[in-house]
Length: 176
Image 1: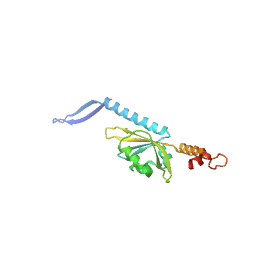
Image 2: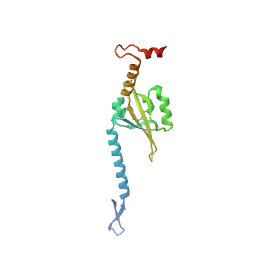
Image 3: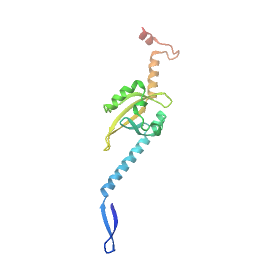
Image 4: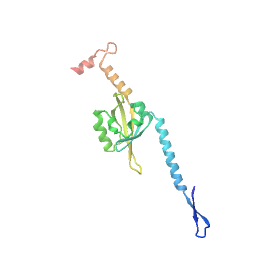
């Protein structure tokens, strides 16, 4: 790939001379293509998953995938620029803030707030993403509502009779 610049120049005798400057820009073009390909891969990846993915810089939402809208009811224009911690339920906010500030990257559970006010139990994992213009973080959220409901149902069944739904002997002994 080359870049050609033609510059007309009028000599003192009135003759027109064209200066030609040719630069090899193959390296720059290949770098640009690599960035475009990387961005396209990331876009397709975020569309292919059912897990909610949120990109944030300095605690402010920069971008997200469509799974966030399905999980929490918000669209990108509604959340862009807002603080990421504002979507975490109050009882988990201190834990989430410490997690983000410390740059932690392990999985943890919390609840996030749906647009209609419902609390949604989720697993969250954050990752630091280095970038020349300044680091940002990516948060991946997985809805664990079904798992929490199943756990609650198993707990109930272990303490109650399946036919009458009355507390069983194990429940009585626990209460005593």
